View 1 (cartoon, helix red, strand yellow):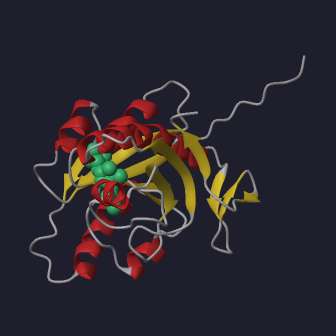
View 2 (tube, protein in one colour):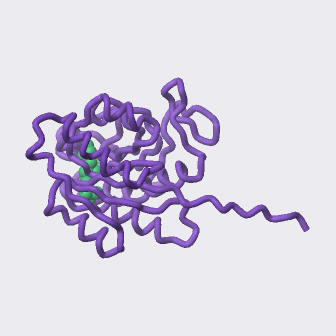
Length: 225
Ligand code: GAR
């Protein structure tokens, strides 16, 4: 019988930044509560006091902080306060989950390779807002969501995972958004798990690496497959 080498590593500490509903946060909470989860959520920070996601975190017994951007004169001053909160829990990974703030290049560089975002489109298509409306207007047949490492440009950066859905002829933005959100809830916990397991990294060449190999394109999970 071969010896079993037990790992006594602590689970990776995740900080999640939100602004609203926090359904992606909920998916991360659910995944973190599985017995075999390689990550735990150490802190949830919202820039809005009324974010429903704060209640989700509190219900799960996760520490929360509200840090409103109002009252800070500059983005840099806000981010310095954000870093003070983050440094208290020393996260191994930050997950932006509907955190609707533009971040400075300095903040992004500080957390480079340790910060993920989820965006409701198949990046590089449709960065920014109102992605579902724009996809329907353009007549696209496929839509979805992307988890990516964060770089200084808005909703860009080396892609990791995409969840794809078919756009139906009678879709409206709300129905399409709901189907995309289902995929978001699959792919974000999966990306966090890969990172926490040490399978996922941002290479020094700026490309995503999975299991040591650079990814030419994101891993795709097709809802219709
Ligand atoms: C999600 O659809 C996420 O992809 C999007 O905000 C929503 C947050 O929902 N993020 C962006 O648009 C980032 N540019 P949630 O609060 O229920 O997770």
